[in-house]
Image 1 (cartoon, rainbow, N blue to C red):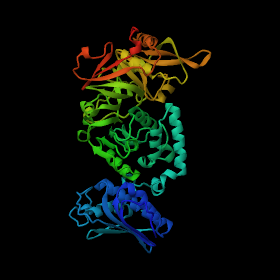
Image 2 (image 1 turned 90 degrees about the horizontal axis):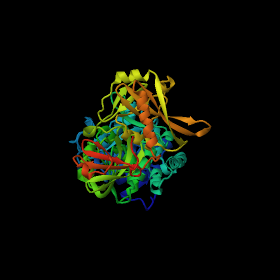
Image 3 (image 1 turned 30 degrees about the vertical axis):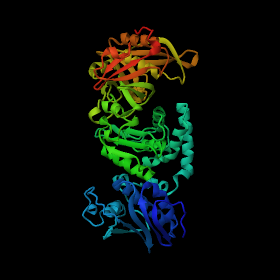
Image 4 (image 1 turned 90 degrees about the vertical axis):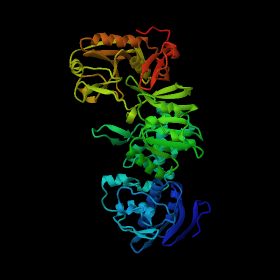
Length: 578
């Protein structure tokens, strides 16, 4: 049977009624071509599906273990009710042991072939047979894979039960996925108001479901869904696949162009694949994470999805990746309290960094551009991320007020009396109203930042719906409610519908504790001094030790470990702050 002339990277290929032999370079780029070859074998449908799975896993694990462009000979055929898979490794490459499996003995003549078939041995309960440099495994066609796979083995497999059709088929032409993608793009445009053609093309090209195994297809392509990847021993999320809306927003902020060198800090695989689409063949993408479990997943998923050129590193993001610097763009996908010097040093002179920076408990995705030794913001957007781990970790303190129902998130090491504040929550409340109104659907997160940076003691009220149902608080917003606290008293931002105007709301504050009324009044006076804008602050990041005389005049200064962050509102400098 004659093969298509455009099949590339094969030294030789033959197809017979009982199988095919492909002397090939094992790279993820060849995965689809190998599937096409398997489809031309005269086997029953179940055997073809099994063969596709086998070859997909062989190539994905070859790329993961040995790097791209690994010369191999892969043979697939049948005999009776068995499928024969053979890997011939002509190169003398030797690999270290992995996972303690005896199959990975580097002293074996066929060390790499054994390594590549190791996963198959575990999944199908078969024993690969090494003969010289060749390793052969016979797999049962009837019944396919083992009847039961533990969740752990499903997780370790490159191809999970929920993604068989997605891996073995042509994903781009999958009708259901295309429909979900169309809905996703429309939702992103609705939520963000704009989506560039470049970012839209990247989202359409990358098979997101391959990076979220076990997640239903509709959920994988939901704009606001962020599947959890890993939790710590206390059940706290420490890694997740960020929502597509947030990833698209940050990519728009980054303004990535073809040929750029990009570093992503905080890995998962999917976002790195989006970046790879944006930089094209002439660019370079590096993604790093401190957690080996996370980077292992990223490598596997990137290989299966067809992005083996993305470089994945396991290291503390605090120090960047000096060996691959400088970078035209750095995108940080974990919440950061500070900007380490390495990030600025590794950024090209005209580079841009997008980072979820936390100031006084509020996180904003800030797009910074380098100005010699400091950074100047171009814009910032509302977001939320899991906190950074490692040397740069600096978490907020959660002061519980009523069990798990409500608490105050306190940043920057501010002291707080949990017992007194909890007592205040269950006591009488006071209220104050500002006369400042906002229409339904209007953004007012700029008010949150204005309050955070002007209240002497600022916190974020974090409440569950149960706290609202119990009548303890008025709101349970996902990202928290701005609050002021002092001793055993606190007050938080609220709103009410304006009488006779169903689409208009007035801002105010509720206060609790002995000084609750005073704090509520303080919040209201700041509301009245706000000019109604939401994204007009200027944020700069200067090295620690920079003299005040070299900082922007009239700016609020936040001193951190490595930097001095300044925030100012140029349009509001003429106003007096209460």
